[in-house]
Image 1 (tube, rainbow over the protein chains, first blue to last red):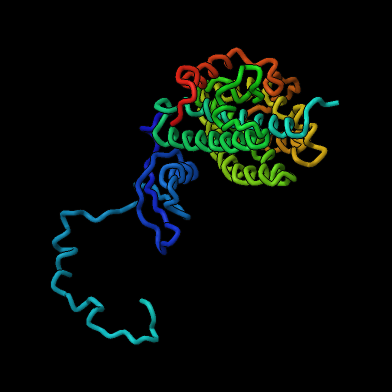
Image 2 (cartoon, chains in turn red, purple; image 1 turned 90 degrees about the vertical axis):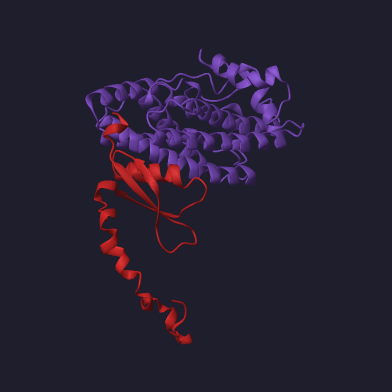
Amino acid sequence: MSEKNWPLYEVFLRSRAGLDHKHAGSVHALDAETALEAARDLYTRRQEGISIWVVKSNHVHASDPVDNPSLFEPADDKIYRHPTFYDIPDEVGKM
Amino acid sequence: MSSMTQKEALTAYATQIADSSLFMGHRMSEWVFKAPTLETEIALMNCALDLIGQSRSFYTYAGEAEGKGRSEDDIAYLRGQTEYRNPLISELPRGDWGYTIVKSYYYSVFAKLFFKALTLSSDKQLAAIAERSLKEVTYHVRYTGEWLLRLGDGTQESKKRTQKSVDELWDYVGEMFIMSEAETQLLQDNISTDIAALRGAWDQEVEALLQQATLDVPTGTWTHEGGKTGKMHTEHFEYILAEHQYLQNRYSGCEW
């Protein structure tokens, strides 16, 4: 039973004060249950998280860097999309 | 009946709990650089550190209860073989991965039941250490239990080797539930707990998991013993003790 055959899982942690899960790293594991344990053992030793997600790495679909010019660069000159140009009424509170 | 004062009994009791954790932790730490994968290595190191941390708390309390100024290190390192009172299962060699998993699972289920009961001790300090330790060993049960399922219900080879460990180690289970002299004496004041009464719950939990892992549940009732009395440690104990005590013997009183 060598690690070569173990699928890779991506690990996401939500910190104590955090609102969202952030990518922390990856682990090799037999299945989702042992991946959660491996993630706990590797990535929460110093109180880094209070919630863990693991996702099989091959379930993550990534954009291709080759496409970056057409995907991301068109946003470069659309600065008006940032909300800094608008006054937010106090009643709205924190956004 | 007993020749021990209450103070001596409490010291002996805290020490025997510490001894169990210490050698379980020591054996687990032997997997450094040798575990099958990085993930499993760090998992066992976490467990080993939990166990050694537990032993430190109990040794420190033993020293306080005794009141002769002995530190955790004095008690942990400066005793002869017969003065260590851990059950034999905790000093057995680490063996292969399956052997370590089964050994740790058997012990951890016991430790979980034991610490849970000890949280109700009339001794507040013991209860407090037990409460913290309980969280740790509950995870050890989960981790080793998950592995046991996968080894038992894994490949033919893993099943064969795990079943062998399940059978061999079964003969060390009974000793964990035998009351020591100190344990019996402290039961009157509700300081210690009745560990003999925990065996039924242990059997139930372990049998259910072994069955789920498609492993045969051993039926033997005989047990090795002699660790908890100190009278008959295994032949492995002298070696582990030599390693454990080497620094203190060579550099007396050295500290980290």
